Image 1: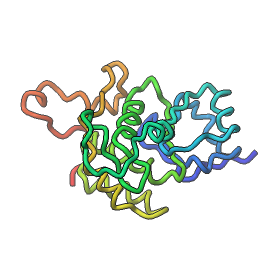
Image 2: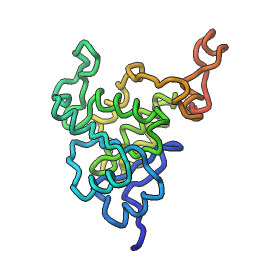
Image 3: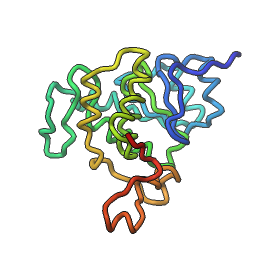
Length: 211
């Protein structure tokens, strides 16, 4: 069987991959099998086909269908403000995005015990690109740099202004950071500032991208 990478397959950070869920056929599954995935995070509100569910089960992969769960919880609404007491009510009108969705996805991705981890959505463009942008925001990238990366992937479809507004408004302080021993080397560089930085305020870390 020939091995073909899934559409929009890419490395986000060591231990974190992304791709289009809709492109995961037999050849693509054979391609990702050597990654020895432990976790798959599905951001779009899709029910996995039986063949895909069986593949993940047979390979010991834990699937988190966050997008579908958020749909059932009513996290996607037409509201444009953070009006809930938990701060998890904001959603991007016209698209399947919510603060709850990104918060949960980022918390899973930051925990190295879930790695190797695959983040996916139906197209591999929209929710996955917003996830990557919110991670970059957490890493301290300036907005123009993370927006450039978002648009580079979204060019396969069409960049969405509402999604860009969502990224801009996403509050990274809502993300619960895993315990120190569960953080990767690359995440410690921006999540665990040095004592000097803590005393004077956070200075740019290794993950920061200057504008």
